Length: 456
Image 1: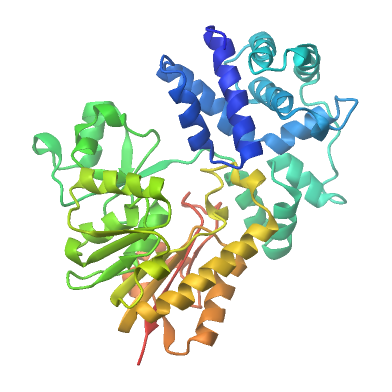
Image 2 (image 1 turned 30 degrees about the vertical axis):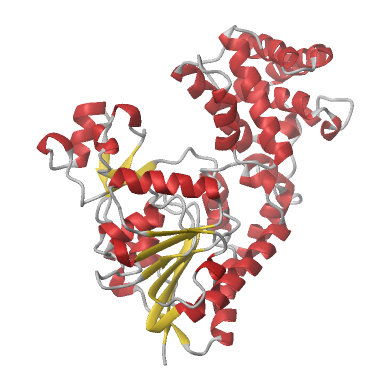
């Protein structure tokens, strides 16, 4: 690859998009691998690459629509590297005001040579010049007669998602969901009360302002701090000392439904990277009463690192299928943050738009049912399963729970109102479920949670 930072950053962005969209891997994973091969990248370069990659994934459908009207062949027929170069270039032209259009075109043309498709340079150059020249002037679907196509293009979502939500939700909720899912999300920290802040500081918000010039605001949920920019963890003693973790407000809210006591025996069934288990421990659970399990070895490594950093010792850590790992064991509380479609966190992982299919929702629902049915045997009488998914899809939420209760009359739903701060009670449904749609006015992730109590 070229040593010129302008060409290099764009070449890495093209490679990252190609890895994500052709190999079905998470964006963070793809970028981590590519950054490892370029140890001399500056933080500014990495930030620029992040912007191009995540921005291109957020607005991919809109950019593809634009370019499809400028090509004499189907856009889908292009080499993926060429298509992604056009996306990276178009994103710069449309959405990165600080990048001169001339640089967006010329450096992206050079980048396509560096990623192994030099014979496509003239095509990329011609199309990007047309994009820059034509700007917003391209035909659009009609909002009334072509509603699905219009919303799909305008908000950059696949047709099947748009059609699904258009038929299921009110128009207001539908439009908020689409528009807010393309906004860069704010970040939330969870204060770890067990670990005191450095230098005798009493308030995490004040500490971050003093040490990193980061402004933040406390949320109604106890210990939840919202901020625009994450701290520089390498230079943050509070992070190194385990004084906080990064955890979205909705995830903290869902974990709080466990209403943990020191004597509870608790299983975190799909635990990595460990945020909810840390939440339970920090709210009084004895480490020796905590069992965590995850199927992914790499994610368990991250969990162990997080546990070590916050000084959570003596928890029982299991690797493998949780059903097999805890066979014959009993717990008073089981936290089941089940594998799901993750449709509620698209704003954090925009690749979900392009890597998911309707079948994925059905497959996730089947796995959730397997886990619920199996782990119901591991709950003590008067114990609870707290079922959680970062999704609002009906197959993974209300239908899932209704099917479970029909098959397990020994369980009942518990009203969670007395476990939820007054501010969040608006998200408790008449069916005693916590249901948060993306695009909500509090700017938190889409989530679902329910408390299932086992009676005699």
